[in-house]
Length: 206
Image: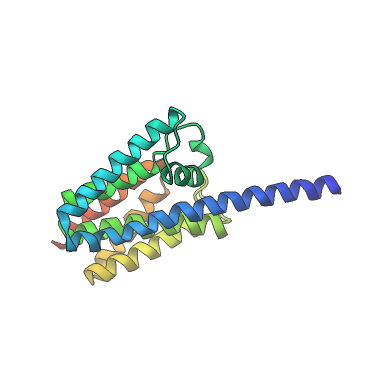
């Protein structure tokens, strides 16, 4: 009985660590929703800052592997890293920024806004909700859950509708984003979602 209680305690502790990491990581993810507003205020300076942040992060990861800790950045990276990222380059922030920059450069501001919101809210809430309350797992998706996919659909539908005011288009974008999110693309969904959803939004609306 004591052994069972101990095992349950260890499992609970591990679950809490994973959940904390996911909340911390997706909080950063959700903060990317501020980028479209900043782009509307100062487009090229914000693009420049994003490129600078991208190269700065890549440099910090390089020196981290050389055993040199970069203040703040290395600590945040360590806290946010998934188990699969242990002893590897943490690609999540890299693909996140690449996806945002690509959507901003490829599409007009409103279409890019829809694509970035799909990444920030759709992918962000899918992961959070899936980790916290997801019980029904979708086969062949590396652990994606029905609850996470539903939250992605709702988040993308609402965020898209708030931008375009077109329920039919928002529905189409939500369905496509949900399908893409459920595909096990690891960190590369950060690139695919904003580019694809932004592109479809521009084609349908503008």
